[in-house]
Image 1 (cartoon, rainbow, N blue to C red):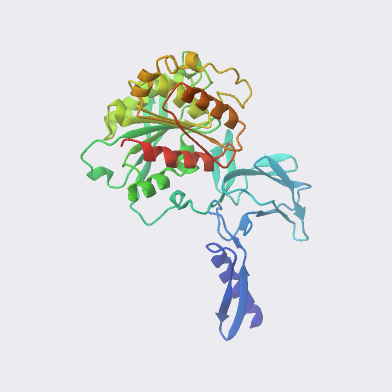
Image 2 (cartoon, helix red, strand yellow):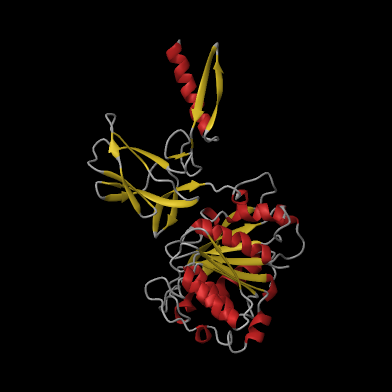
Length: 396
């Protein structure tokens, strides 16, 4: 009877561990009373709440993998590799050092081959499908699903005359969108290199952020459009690169295909003051060039963690006036063109000092640029906070 009781207790504790961390208390099973301690949670990024990585109470992570024929198994999280040890049951286990809050890609390395963890959900990032673990941050409840009215995220397809193919968009519409009579403002949001249209809606938690801010009255109801900017023109050219010329394929895609499709099929405003463009990393560079050099299209621009000012290979001697003509020599007109111009970067990102220097250069010439930095490197928690702040400034 006692053995059965222990098995039931184990099952109960496993379920409790999915929702509580570092809890201690008494549990009654029949006439038996037990004191139990729960010192881990199961991350929401796990496939199965009964199996997979465990987030310990100090934010370290315990990984367990069954690989009976493997000779060496490692976990690579955030670029740090941890050697796993095998026990007599052929289970490989390791506990990492404490991780900073946020969203972290990781992979298993089994006998030298990097693979996704079958116990984790997979996300497209780093130019591949990767496992990931979510480590909650205290005070950032706006990144989580709450008891508020929820909008919708849909994947739709439009025809690209640049790529000569059908291409996807993921579009967030706020709660009660279909009941709204007036056209809503719209944000065109861009992913980083090695990602695609799914990034902002999945890793970035755009819908959760918007639902919570709108419910609190901190952001206007708006439509957010996430496109795949990895466009290859049939006439040559790629939709990336930190130069005006390198932006032309995606600029054409955005202005001639994406925006017309959205404005035809959704209840969105068609004026510049009702449009915003923002993005992270590569998408931040696209937003900087396209957003700031097309003021007749966008009156609001957000640039998050771009590397074009420096901090990445190939970026140097950025000439601000050359890249955005008039920003320093006709600042009055530039400021008049934009309702919101907002820049951000992670405080541990190699791009941070270059970004601060360019912001200082702009402010010395009285450019109306808002700037903020957040704890973190080149990572999603920084970009979530960037979006969270940016949308609160928009369309006032």
